[in-house]
Image 1: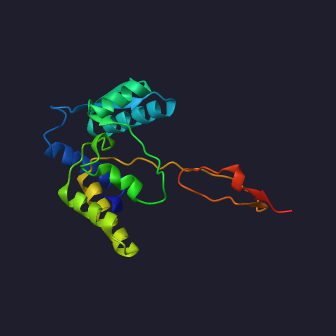
Image 2: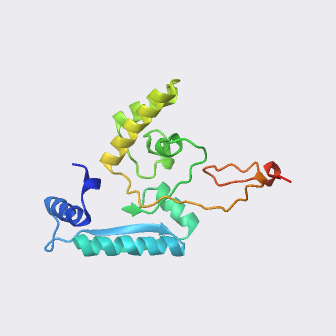
Image 3: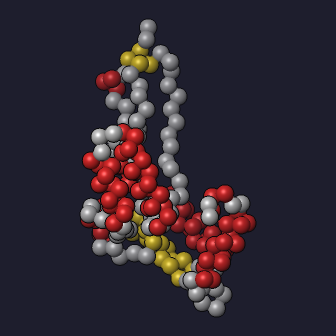
Length: 187
């Protein structure tokens, strides 16, 4: 079933059914902890997720805030149940995100995700010289990753810039870095 095609009420009903099938409900409440690093936005996000889980399923969620270095240590040692994490692509390719879930990347694989089929498809993509076949392999790997759900994508960062048409050398990029040495002004 494609959950994304369901309206909110149907998704909520499905979540409640799956929660009950897992053995949880009003008589047996799931209790989780969300680890997040110190930031007002991260705190707001953790509170919002906890509130949604409580309202929809009755999950009791504890929030654990840690300063950056402690948080990184906890992540590295896998000392969490749920962790708020993010990644900004450092090059314009899906590989920058998908490669973080390969079983052989060590601590960069925060979730500890392991899937032989995902790994196989990523290896195929990494050695593929045909761009279309490479993209198809990564798309298949992404579908496996999302079906297995070691992550819960919540939002994507975006930026907006108002750039005069008189500016030359401005190029959008995933890092949102725009060295002024490449910029010019049309007279």
